[in-house]
Length: 102
Image (tube, rainbow, N blue to C red; front, side, top):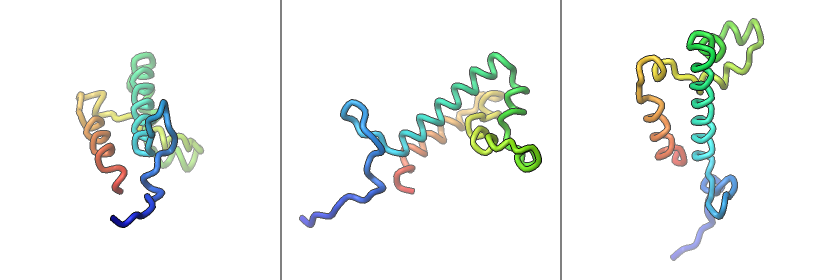
């Protein structure tokens, strides 16, 4: 067998209790955490308030400087909360399977 060194892309970011944590799993964890926080905020503040605060609105970013919208819109999926869509779960599953390959 020919030995070759493993690519930098497949090395874990860090280890937790002897298990490797890859970038894909870390990003999925952050995404799920943000999704849960958005769901809790919707429960306390209401859907419309959360939507206006997290939605991707380029005019708000450019004119008012609300740069958090570039990241926060990913955590809030209005279709999931209004229609109980499985799009979020499907995205996370596909990202888990194909994330390391891309």
